[in-house]
Picture 1: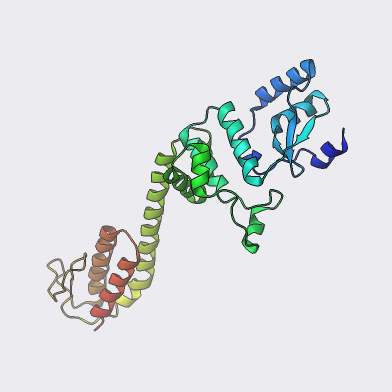
Picture 2: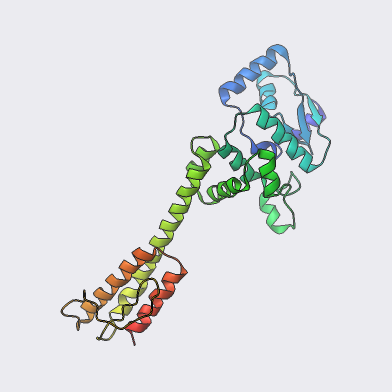
Length: 270
């Protein structure tokens, strides 16, 4: 094995890792072909890492053949463009799969050998902007933004399904947004339950102000649903908590809901 290949030791460049590897059976077929006919195309290196040819590298190892390599000459962006061009012609990737690749591509910092967690400590610009990634992959910037939302907030299972083409990125984005909204509403409801249950019990008797949930002008009116024994602190607290619960369900969450609840509690305690 040459010294150049020994230096590489099969490590892939981050640009190459944007695209999936062959399935084990297909890799075995490639290894058998290389064993019978030799390595037809050289493995392309960039900065000592495999830019193109990860499957050929693995197949050569399986076949017991010394990998043949060449060095790519060009800028980082030219290397990225080259990898995208090759893989988009080789593979039948859906728009959603390409969008997920774009979501991975746009944040890549300069310097293929550096880890992404190092980028937080260094003033590095991405190799490709979101617009450039969209152009390279023939997808819209909107699709890449949706894919990034799925990548950052979706479950690993959902991300894997989009990458494999089982789920469209638009459907996955809707699911993630719905889960985030529902999760925020559940969190707000829990906070309301914990923070108001004991405070409301201390509210003085009297008429409950019931402003419109959407912020209409407030009027101090008697709630028709108030219990008959509204002079009881416990009954009054339960009634007021029920009001907050219904409004929480109606509003769904957000900072406005929190401010509204705080205003409610202040009014009931004055």
